[in-house]
Structure formats: structure tokens, C-alpha cells
Length: 540
Image 1 (spheres, rainbow, N blue to C red):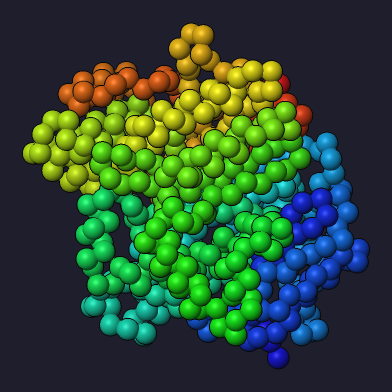
Image 2 (tube, rainbow, N blue to C red; image 1 turned 30 degrees about the vertical axis):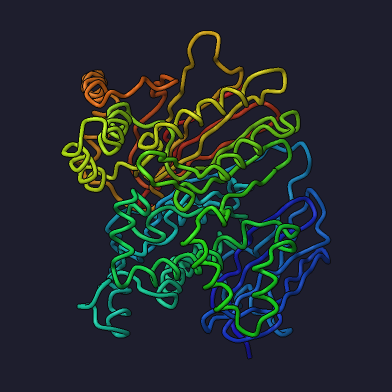
């Protein structure tokens, strides 16, 4: 009999349909049955000896929240008979209701040792406890990168790896292949609270560096060095393959899935491994041939989730966070039918607006690496870039300016949305920053950078002090000195810190209703609850 190995994960939802992702123990037919009669079935597909299904559920009615069961070959496998959680539901908000969007990033999923969690309470666990108790439920959960840590494994995973291969051989205690990636997803998504939460709250996901390796695609020199490493090719292909299976497929609507040639090929094959591996190899050879970014519309809220890792142009003379095709896609999606949305959410794992000193440091370093101060400084700049993780939007100055111009254009004119919110993580703290444009060019929309991480990780005290200092007046003076040395042009916008920095395991929630937007930051407490750190009105 087929068993449920992982999931269910409730992924895409709209007013009438949804998708539910599962991994099973063997080939079978997966079925979702809702209490109100909505249902769907899908045959599993196979990748690298594992069996998965993405079940399309149809017949849902807006404004309802039916519970659902998962069946494999007709036998019910979810909810478990001994579950201590309420039934999983598929909630479809009615038109005109407020939309609650919860987001964060950087979840190191290792279970606590002997009940003592070395990085503190998991904010997703705390959110699950609240929702299970009947508290406020997000309408969608955005996971903005580092869902798994391929390069920072737990003690339990290291023991599992050691039983499989010699950790004295590279890549040591990091994951090496697809099977080892599946171990990371089991460790992350089989956590009881998180498993139930992901079964009942829709999720949108995008990768960041640790889903593959720290500082993935920092520079052309970095990439050349990695490609010369014997284990890198298998690691990258396995990372992209496992991301496509576990995260990317669920980001897509049923219509997008139906039009996806790779998904069709995998479904049609007894074993989709070769087709998926060839796709991943093509994505490595020609990153512009693949689009990991996607758009979701939630009533009058538009979400654009942007790939800021695989879509980079790394040549020092034409460095860009997004290749031309990706940048064109982002521009087109932001500007299309602006009258149809009141709020634009741009999910980018890396913050657009950073503490001022860090922004200036990254801009200066990019100028050095580009050769503005000669070869010796260029070599120093590359070493500094890798040592200090200088690879955010500020390290791609042309892309930073293009994004500023896009937000100004999107937020201007009679069709301007009420808000443009840039949702980010990565930097292991939270803050709110607000840009300002030169007089006469400012958009009508409220534009804000909302950064929230980690969900479950830590930041050393020295780094905390650095982030706090980065916003200070002395830091701004130092930053200006650096940019003058690098002959860097002034950025097209200025910005101020409107809140933070806040540290701890935390989540932000946007509540969007009509043209109003409210923000709440919550931190996980050791008693399993979430406590509100900050609430603010972004737009009335």
C-alpha cells in the first residue's frame, strides 16, 4: 500500500481551484477530497526513485473553507488518525475581503537537541500553534529563500550523510546529490507543526543562496572557481532539480502547469529524472533560458516573485541582478493593467534598500571589481566581495537604479497603486526603509522596503552591532568617503530607516484591504507564542 512520505502542501489557490503537493512511497493515484464535494486526482510521477504528485483541486467556492482528506489508491492517509491538529482546509477568500500576507526567510530546520533549540524558537512553529488554536490565519505565506540549507547541515543530517559516504571527501558535510537534498526537505517539512501549517495555508516560494550554496552566483570569478570544483556540477543540478520538484511546481497555476513542456514530459515518462536533469543542465549553461520568477494575483493585490540568484549577469562590465529578459518580464508585469490592482508586492530575497554603509560598501566594491581604481584594487574588491557577502542589489548598481525607475513609473499617474512593497529577507534582521525621489519625480504610491528574517536562525552579536551602526550618521559619512574613492555616481533615490532594526526569529504580516495596507512584525517566544513587536499603517 502506498504511504504518504511528505506533505500534503497546499500551494496554489484562487477562488475556484487549488493544487496540493505530496510525496508518496511508491507509484499510485493521489486524490484530494473536500468536505463540500470539491476534489481532484493525479497520478504520481517519478524523479530519482522518489514519487510525487501535484493534485489539481477544482469545484471550490469563493468564501468557503472546506476541510480535505488525502487518499492514495483510495486509502485515506491524511489527516493521520492520531493528529492533534484541526483538519486541514482549503480556504478561498471571497471578493472584497482583506488579504493577509505573511512572509519571512531563512529557516534552518534542524530540530532542537534535547529540547534546547540553539537558535531559539521557530517562528513557523509558533504561527502554526496560533492558527491551530483558532487565531489569525494568513491567506498566503511567502517563503523568501533559504527554505533548506545545503551548506549548513544539522548534526542529525551529518550522521545520516556519514552513513552514506565518507565525509572526508568533498563536499564533506554539505549535501552532494538529489537524494541528500530530499533529506533536507524531510528534516524541514516533517516538523509536525510546520507540516500541518503547510497543509492548510497556501505558500509561494523562491530560492536564495543557501538553497544551493552560500553566496551563489556572487561573481564571474566565483562561478569559474566553482565550476572547476569536481563536486559542483552534481550539487547545482541536484539543487535545481529538487527545487523544481519541491518548490517551483507549486508556485504555478493549473493553466501554467498545463502549458509547461517539462512538466508534461515528466508526467508522460515512467521516470522523469533524465528530462529534469537535462533541464537543470540547460539552466546552468544558459540561465536566461529558464524563468523561475512568477506572478500571482490575489484579488486586487499583485505579487511578483523575482529570481535574484539564477538570473544574474556576472560579467563585470555588464553586471546585472536580472538578465535582460528577466528585467523585461518584471517591468511588463508591474506595468500591465495597473488599474486592476491596488497594491504591488515585489518578492525579492535580497533587500533593495540596505543600511546606508552596507549599500555604499557594496557599490564601492562593485566599482573596484569593475576596474575603476586599477587591477590591484580590482583583486582586492573580489576578495572583499566574497569575504563580506557583498552581492545584494547595491552590488549591481545599474539594476538598483533600474528598479528605482520602475517603482517610480509604476507608482505614478492616475492608475498608480496605493502601495509598492518590496518584500525581502536574507540579512537575518528586520527593518522598514522608505525611499525618496528628487523633487518632481516622486511617485504617488507609498513605496517601502520591508525586510524580515530569519524565521529560524541566528545572527552573532558583532553582526547585530554592524547592522545597527550601518544606519548611523557616522556610517553614512564613511560610506560617502568610500563611494568617492570608487568614483561611484549618487544613487537615484535616498532613503531613511522607518523602523528597526529588529532581531530574533520573526515574521511580518501585511493586511491589505481596498487601498489600505497595515504591517505587523511578530517575534517568536520560547513559550511557543508570537508577540507583536511593531504595528504600523502604511496606507489608509
